[in-house]
Length: 286
Image (cartoon, rainbow, N blue to C red; front, top):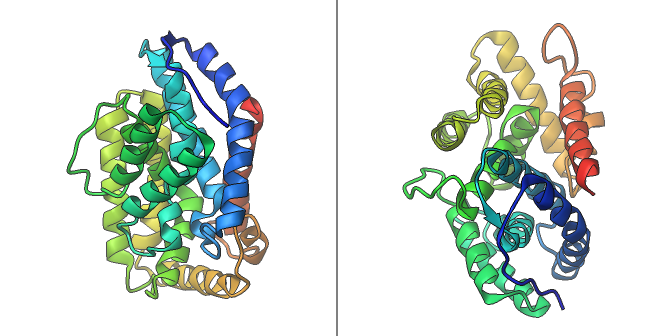
């Protein structure tokens, strides 16, 4: 049984230490739950690897705020881990954009089985429901679990990782990513605007994410002939890759080898670099 008492405000160092202690056990329990319940099976854009990346994105945001004097209680780390690891599980049964309610239901079932504190369970379910709102009609404080997990999820939709994820989920929904470009661009723009509104005061973090957003924006908005050819090539590669029913993005890097992104490197090199950076971040704390 996993339980967690409610504590007082912690320093960034104490938060990182608590995360390092708690994450492995929650990760193991969540992974087993995924396997037993077939969660996100065949949805590689939103597989367990995506949920792990969001978890470390969430931790990074919380640590940045703690470094600026924001106080978090110890239970926030537990809430952050579970909400991140379950935020998109609703896609298992609801492939559309509004899958947060189903994800909240799945997370509550998991937390009940694990004996998680009711206060934590309620916060987790609320955050998972809110992450659906990519028009950001509700405004939550930057230090809220809802804001942290929502923006951490948005971060994984930028850059080369984001390009591949946008294409893959569009295809899984029966859409043509080329024809769906306007909606993809609107979605990415709303995510980026919200990130800058909530966390724009974090200069370097906000700047890095703007650069990654612009990579995604340029890929889908380019209308010159070379842009269209490259985009269609990536889409068709991902379409073929999905036929093998992969569970994560890592196997995609070899498929994309040889597609030139610019004059410096291939698309797969940039994707591999982004994914490697996420593994480095994970190894820092686990």
